[in-house]
Length: 142
Image: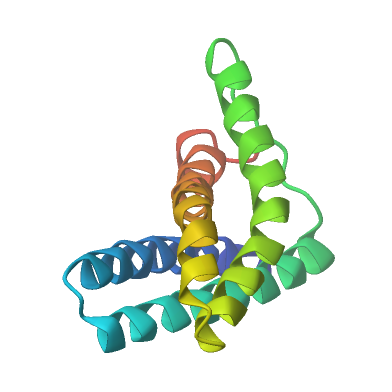
């Protein structure tokens, strides 16, 4: 197996793990479990950073993978991909600023931004898994 066949699956696992950690972190803070919340969110940040590193390596090694689906699924796929890509670029600085505010104990501003950051980050993580399934399993490259 080559790195180009291993990394897409690893990236999907990392996206799924990030989503799980984000939901867990949200549930922890709702229950006032601050230490667990912090652990979940820092772990989600670490997993997402690892994902980004693996994704960039994959793109450098293998180039882009072309979607082979035809018909109604094609505009659906590209709509998901477009929203995912735009939000993935936007979420990076949002996550960093949200994290810095929390680490500096600026919780009022942290919470205000986290209300936007969390759902967007979760969307990017979930759609990352969906894109993987569409691109590599339902409509695999030829």
